[in-house]
Image (cartoon, rainbow, N blue to C red; front, side, top):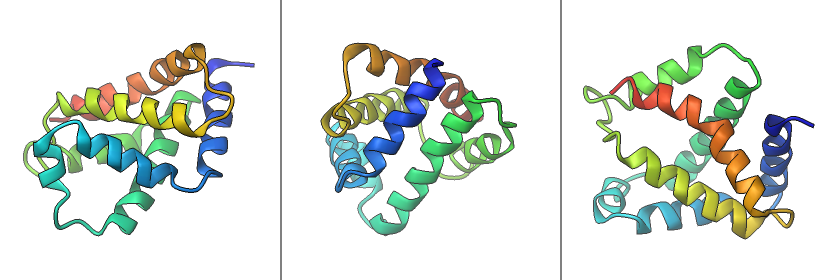
Length: 130
């Protein structure tokens, strides 16, 4: 089984657990006051839906899907749009790994590293659009 397959299966287990996406935002917003402030007037139900799709796009990109949707995501998060600072992506990934650890009963350190390995190229593509 490939590393990408391991992450895909882990994501399926996480999505099946209640509170996965809520917990992610709790961890992510706790990482910096500026991040918490950015979400102050956000429709969090809609945001969780976008997150669910965004993580899937990162995994699909790692599985060989074209990067069109990630490039569009990068554009929307760029300096001229949502203005997401590049350093926030590391905090985002850290919060995601903490959340996966809390929700995937099969989590171990190797799986955490697999998540980082699989998602980092897509995250770098998005970050590069800043």
